[in-house]
Image (cartoon, rainbow over all chains, first blue to last red; front, top):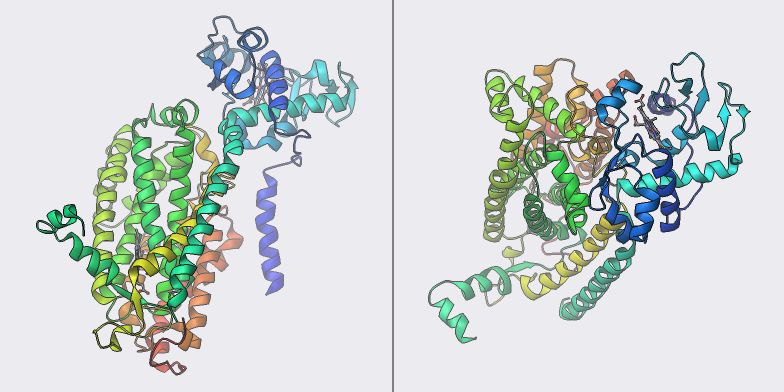
Length: 227
Length: 403
Ligand code: HEM
C-alpha cells in the first residue's frame, strides 16, 4: 500500500518536473525599492527596445519607486515618443518584431506572475551560443527561443556545455546581480501593489487583531453568567 | 423605546422582528467552533456583493476588453488591487466557510427532522454558489477563464437531449466570446446573487422556525422553563452576537493576511494561467478547475465515458439533498455514533484526496485511486440507510451535557 502510494507520488512529481529542466534558481537579490530601481534601469537599457511592460505607466515609477521625473525621462524613457502618463511600450511595432524574430516579443508586465521570478532568472542565465540557430543563440530552459542573448555583452557567452567561452564586461557574480535586479523589477511590474500591500499590511492586521481581542473580551464578559 | 422606533412599529413590525429573531430567539448554549461559519457565510456574502459592485464599475464584458479592464483595475484604478483581491480571496474563503458549515451539518446530524427543509435550502445554496463561482471565474477572460469556459460548456453540451440547447444559451454563440461574457455577467452579478439572497433569507426563516441543532444533537425545545423558554437556550442577542463578533475578528485576521501577503495563494485563489489573456490558439498545459470544484472534476475524469461521467457528476451533486432520507438513525450527533463519525471522517478525506487529484495533470497513474475514491464517495451515501439502522450508538443525554 505504502509502496503503491510512493510510486504514485513519484509519478506525479515526475510529470511536474519534466516541464522544468534545468532546475529553477531563485534570484540572489532582495525585493526592495533599491533593487527594483536598478532593475528598471537595466531593463530600459537592454530589454525595452523589444519588450513592453505596457501596464506600467512611466509616472507611477516616480510614486512607487522614488525616481524623479527627470530621472525617469533620462534613464528609462528611451523609446522616442514615450509619454510620462503612458505605458512603457517600445517603438518597435509588433509587426516588425514578428518579421525580425519570427515571434513578437511578448509584453512582460505579468511575466513574473505567469512564470515566476525563478523561471525568469533561470531563463536569462540559460542562453548559450548555438551556430545552428539563425540568431546564433539557444536557451536551455526554453529550447529554440527566438530571443537573442542581449545580455551577452555584460554576462559573457556560454557554449552548449555551459562553459564560458567569452567573458563579459562584468564578473559572473556581478552579472547575476544585474539579472537578479531585472527579475525583481519584473516581479514588481507583475504586481506593483506588493509594495503598498507590504506597507499597509501591518496596520490592517493590527486593526483586525485588536478587533478580535476586544470582541473576545466582550464575549467573555457577556458569557460570565452562562453556566 | 425611542419615538422613532414607536413611529416605525405602528407601521412595520420592527421591534417584533428584533424580539422574535434576536433578543428572544433562543439558541442552544453549547455552540462550538463549527457554529461560527453560518454568520461568517453571511459576512462573506455581503463582502462579495460590495466588492463586486465596485469591480463592476470598471469591468467591461467583451472578449476584447475584459482582460484589459481587469488589468486596468489592478494598475490604474485607485485601490483597485485591494477591491479585486478582496473579491478573489472572498470567493475562495466563501467555499472554505461553506464547506466547514456543511461539515458541521454532517457531524451533528443537522439535516435530520425537523431540519430537512433547512438542509435542502442549504444544499441549493451550495449549488447556486458553485454556479456563481463558475460564472465569475470566466469574467476576467484570462486564458484559464477562456478554457474553463470552453470545457464546462462542452460538458453541458454533452448532457443528453437538452445539452446542446443549454450550452448555446450559455455561450450565446458557437464559441466562448463576447456574447458569453455579456450573459455571464448578467448571471454572475444579477441572477445568482438575487437567487442567493432569496435562498439565504428562506434559509434563515426555516432556521428560526425549527431552531438550531447543537453539538449534542438534542432538541432544547423539549425542556422548557416556566416562561415557556428552553432551559438550555440563551437569547441569540447579546450572547451569540458578541460570540459571532469574535469569530468575525479571527476570520478577518486570516482574510487580511491573505489579501495583503498572499493574494494569489500560490495559484489557488487566482489561477496562474489567468495572468495571460484568453487565447483560443494556446491551450494551457493543464486545464484544471478552481480548488473548490476540483473534487467534481476528478470524478468526471475518473470515468472514460463522457455521458456516464456527467451522470455521475449529477448524482454526486444530488446525493447530499437526499441525506435526510438516507439516514434512519434517531440519534443526531456523531458524538454518540462512533461508526457514523468514522464514516464522516473518511468521507471528508475522500473529498480532499479527490480535490487534490482534480488539480493534478491527467496522468494514468491517478486513474485507479480516483476510481476508488469515487466509489468511496458514493459508498458513504449508499451504506448510510443500512449502517444507520444497525450501528451501535452511545447513550444520548436527556439535555445538553455541558456548555
Ligand atoms: C450562502 C450560504 C449560506 C449562508 C449565508 C448560511 C447561513 C446560515 C446561518 C447564519 C446559520 C445559523 C448559524 C449557524 O448554525 O452556523 C445557518 C445554519 C444552518 N445552515 Fe446554513 N448558510 C449557507 C449555506 C448552507 C449550506 C450550503 C448548507 C448545507 C448544505 C447549510 C445548512 C445549514 C444547516 C443544516 C443549519 C442549521 C445547523 C444547526 O443548527 O446545527 N447552509 N446557515
